[in-house]
Length: 217
Image 1 (cartoon, one colour):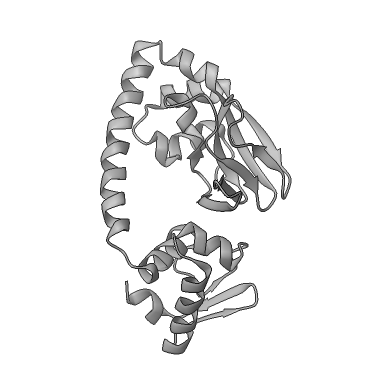
Image 2 (spheres, rainbow, N blue to C red):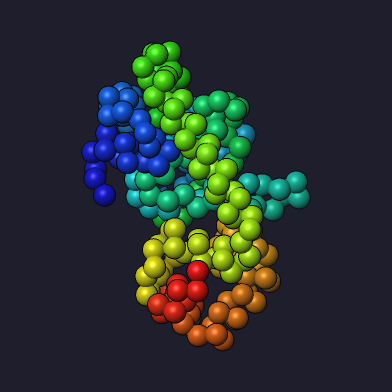
């Protein structure tokens, strides 16, 4: 992956469609930050001072339920923007961001970002990008809600790791179950089903797959 902040921002899916000039302006107000394994980048309900772009490592977004239990809302992928909700919806983070491995992020200050929106050229670029993103998310939600747990698990692996023969998720089975909206018990039954069918095996920390596993979806 490129280490140039302009290219990282331009290549991020969230910023797809922005001009290079707009990406340069975002890069100018950004700075890079390293987060150690198990460190908390920001806490749920804390003041939202910045949005982040993941450069390397694993970051999980976690929500605390009414009974105190934590649910993994999302596992952030490299090149993905997160915490963007603070730009428009609310000034506080709705989730906690935890580094599951050492990670590097690009930090984009909220104040600087909003100041750029006062510039007509940047604002027009940004609004066009948001409309395209909204269309994509609508289609994505429709797709995911029509999937069963096996399809969601396969899609999770494909999106995060690609169709590899050997995958080391770096996440617990409980965390992956939460990320795909399944209970640990349902997820455990799914793994047993996949291993019994063949072409899939979770051995220790590593998942082994064969082409037949991916060809089903």
